[in-house]
Length: 324
Image (cartoon, rainbow, N blue to C red):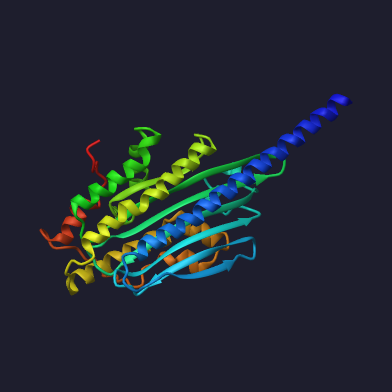
């Protein structure tokens, strides 16, 4: 009887300690994400003479809330958002459990920073980034957690030097964690940001990772931080080089046409968008990634030998930009 009491005490103590450690880790991740949102907003605002992010704090009835920041009608950025969210619920939506049935009927907690920026100048690429932590709990069973995220670049009139610099920065984010990490997550990005119905990538890629927990919490968290911390260093130099380039109606028209592809991907394939909508998230924050203007044309194709054709022929096909 005494042994049973000691075993029960030991089990409860371990459960309490595990719960305490996870709560402490959640606080660390949340503090990092809030700081990251602040850093990125400050960095992007530094390119704008006057426009600033407006902040919108919101609560989610089912649990949690967020801090959405949106910049509109800037000199550099037509519109963009940098969103922090920390939400919870009693059951993961189908997008999260479809490929992992062991997650069904678990409570969940999700937090992350997600951003999309749509520039005015067609020579400046649209950019997307996010980093996140998911936690799935079930009484009497071990807590399941994983990190995910990445960043990717969607140019309209690409420059090879910019694309190489973008991928060099992505590799730098991965390098401390092993030589094989960048090629693996670069390939995953190419495969994820792919419009199957168009047979083209959304842009020139970057990094994408998900379900990351095999390294343990500290190493996985460190990698997520490295990805988040490298975002501005990859994007701002491109913005600074291209934001003052002269363009006309033709380039703007093509930019709007290609933005339509962005809308198609986000509404048809993007798991983050689907997760947010299926979990009852805040629609305004979820759809902040949409461009302020976009157009569609019937059966349009670029003329051979034009810069627009070069985008399709060269840049919307996965390739080894760094020769690794």
